[in-house]
Length: 541
Image (cartoon, rainbow, N blue to C red; front, side):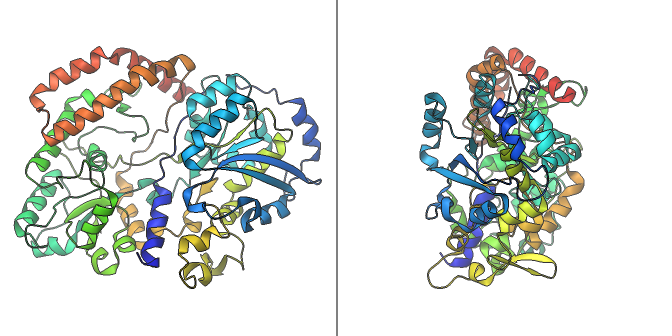
């Protein structure tokens, strides 16, 4: 794999990280520890350095595989930030494969760091250890020492809602995507081979019916030859389901809360859409595509490598994926044009496949062992500013980036490293953002495929069809989480299994009533009571 493709795939991989998006917790507590009161005397509320007298902090941190060969305890970004702030972070770095085990040992054994950084702490643990006072409540600390995060929460109230637990407390500082960086929030998006459209004398589809007709026509045309043309391909059937959800009137507030959206007939009521007639109609449509060979038949099991190999052979007439030019090169990638939201048979037309601006609620979590909570909150808050985002994602001017035409761009020794060194390796020698979105990621300081012209144009085309509100994941109480982790997970797993079976034909849609009855027997009424209560809290917070 050449350097250019390696760079593209690397930048792609960091934005599709599966980070656990969750939260929960005890009412707006203001009892900062006495240790913190003492340390606050050494903290400057604005500007740098953060503290006048140097301090050390120990952070337990996830070290993604892309950072395998570097030592965060001696690397440009953290050395520079230590000089600027007078805060020296001692990094206790964990292998991702052992992260959960090591995190649980630290929490269970009482050998606590000052903070957990990008440690993928699930909402159940945030609630559990927050209520036990192992994790510090941050409400007052954020209000006084985190003006950048506070400003972002004031501008986008969903951020505060996403990190405020049922008890009113905030136990973590989040990783965020700039609200207007729509291209990144879209993640993979739909593309269609415009060269083949022209060959068929067809226009870019605007309805589900037109999309179907294109797929049929291109299969018959077989432009790849030898019957190898694949009308629609992707790495997971869920991508297609989520894209078409807006064409059938479901998932109307985004995908963060599985199978849940807002009842279109009652704005105060949530709906379990996976048992609705609209959802069934969507599955019938997708099954029709699959049954007629218009969807890649291996889509339920295809590996990324095979998908990329197919794309490199120019086999796909349409797909849901990342920027084609960035990933497949200009010769193949330039054939594709983006598709927005398709109008469905009942007139629904919205683009609901969009993440919340809250990427991970638990970017930084402070523990009861932290003697300097004020300084630690200020340390993290810097990365919610333009200056901090530039430092984290671009590094130091003159060493990793330079300004060209008013824009920060990586220097040549990173973009085109010498010898066998890859772009990824060049970045990892001086920066640590690979595989770890932290603070806020902004379009101005991100040079991945989502900032490429083709992807930005696609986002502009999709923007008019995006719902006014995308929900983050709701937060739940301890009792609610018990149900969600047992019967709630059973329901979600069953829905996903039956979705795939209905689409593939392994289950006949004539058994729909049995499917609905099974979900009801698994505890749907209780699940909806929990979701409704969580939604009511969300609205009121």
